[in-house]
Each structure stands twice: as structure tokens, then as C-alpha cells.
Length: 363
Image 1 (cartoon, one colour):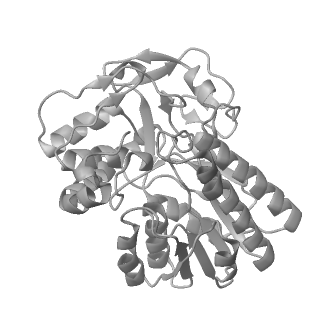
Image 2: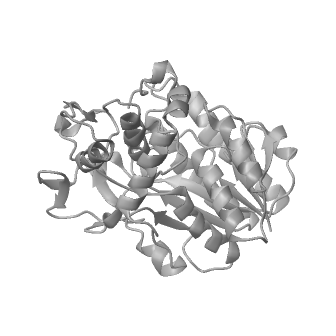
């Protein structure tokens, strides 16, 4: 089976490629990346060591995709993942964001149509309504927010399910990914190729460069490794907001099952994430990083909340477990310890990747 991975030199793409290569000798893996993200070129040797062929190209350019070999499956990991993208705050215009996240997907759908390839689309929890998440009621404990009161459709003690609202506002980033999902559904129905849409929460772990737009867990670990102190932003500045996470390798374990069972009657769209057991508030994350790195002092906070931030996102991945037998394989503590250790061992590279003299990008 031939598998094309887009964004193959990013953290998610490269780690999924390596996991698939190690899991099955029957897969012929190749990937494409435009190497635009700082540090992505360091993945080339890593990929070659796992037998993954690399093609330099840009999914926004149809001719670059036309030049690629045919694949049985495409795993789309290419995206601008920042929730602030397109707003001017991240240095990316709305047109640039749309060019990668939506137009790039349309080009991939044309590739799948022409080659008869199946598509695994890595989507995001940001397709869920920021307004609806902010409207939830919470109790405040000393360390985190805990949902309380009457829950809306698609929300339970286990978190956000696939039935939760996707009504705007989401964020410009979330809107591009939701639009990509809709177009992928239409193409799959019209042209009859297999489609899997995996809506992911935070994906993080060792090997991630740790910039803020890649998820808060690696960002926190890398900041501490460099002797820096990130700040709690929003919701009163106390760090009570909650996220869950999984590693790219855990995501790859699900994708491998999907590739091997293209005729499964499982829903096309499933949530994937760490769930309640793999969730942490920023304060809990900060406490663990402070202990690991032996840091002292108090972490400061900024009370004001940014547009499209959400106070609480935990994944209800019951459908993925029911239909694919999938759940995170690693504990929160083990994943974070490995991430902190990797950050400590690679702090000089992180400093170079971040630029700005090793100062963290704006969160």
C-alpha cells in the first residue's frame, strides 16, 4: 500500500510517518513538504532513517501535486495550525491562511479524485463553536475549571462529542478546517473514494518544536527548558482553563487501523484526543513543569481573554473507541515527562528554531 503524507516534515507528519513505518512493512511511505516552517528541514534525516521518501513541494500548487507518484491513501497533515492565523496577530493574512488550509485541501481532493486515493483528513477541535464553549458553566477549583450545570447537546462529563455545535464564531483557522471537512465529504460522495476525518485536540510530544501555535503542552515544556516563564493568558489569568492531548504516535495508531480497514462502517468523522484522563489545566501543567525543571517563583497571568480562546476543551472520543478500538496508550505524566526531557536535551536547537534570541513567540 502506497501512502502519501502531506506536511511530512512537521512534528505531526514526521512522527506519524515514522510510527507507520515501524508498524507495518507493507506500507510504502512518501511525503511532501514546502519546508516553510523553521526547523522542518531537520526532519529530513529522521524521515530518511525510517525509509520515507521526501518530495519538496507545496500543496497550494496543483502542479507540485501532479508531479507526485500515485498513492492508495493520502494523510493530510499540512496546515497552518494557529488559532490566531489570519487575524494579523500571527503575521499571517486571511488569504494566506485560506491558501494553505482550504485551497491546499481542494488540490488534495483533486489528487484523490484523479488517482482514486483514499483520504485521511486531520482536522481539529477548533471546528467546534468557540461561543458555545464559552457559554458553558463552570465551577472553579484551586487548580482547574470543572463543567457544571445543564450541558448543551454534544457535551457531557466526558467532554465534547461530534454532536457539539459548529456554529460560528470558531476562528478563521477553525472555519478553514470546517470548510475543508465539508468539501472532503462532498468529494467523497461525488467521486466515491474512502474518507476519514479525525478531529483532533492538542497533539504534542517529544520532537515538537514547541511554538505556541503547535499546542500549549510542548510550548510550556520548551519555555521552561530555556529558562523562560510563560504566562497564563485569559479567564482571569489564573491558569484554570483545561485542554487534553495525545502524541502524534498515538494518532498514527488510529490511522493505521483506518488504512487497514477501508470498508469499515465507522462514521466518517470521529473525535480523537486524550479525554478527561489526559487533560490538564494550565496551572496543573505549570506545576508539573516547575517540578521537573526545578524552577522557583510565581507564574504571572494576564486577565484579559483573547478572541476565539476557549476555557475548556476535553475530547469525548467514544466513537473512535467503539468503532476503531482506539484510545490513548500513554499516561499524561509519562507523555509530559518525555516531552520535558526532550526539550531539555534539545534546548539549543529549540533556541535556534524559535529565533528572536530564544524568546518564545507570542502565545
